[in-house]
Length: 48
Ligand SMILES: [Zn+2]
Image (cartoon, rainbow, N blue to C red):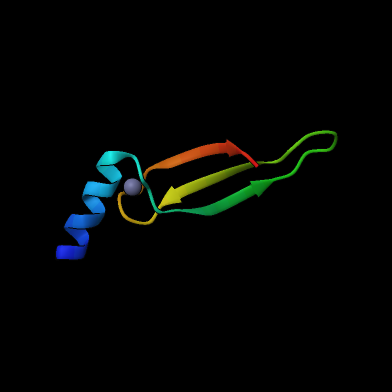
């Protein structure tokens, strides 16, 4: 419970525990990856 609360605070501060869900590679450029926070479930796409 304490860990969950601590994690919630970290997420609230913007320090998410992201892990990669999908990675898309494109020719001539970088890839796009979708990441999800293990704690709060926030999803984000970012340039790999
Ligand atoms: Zn989070």
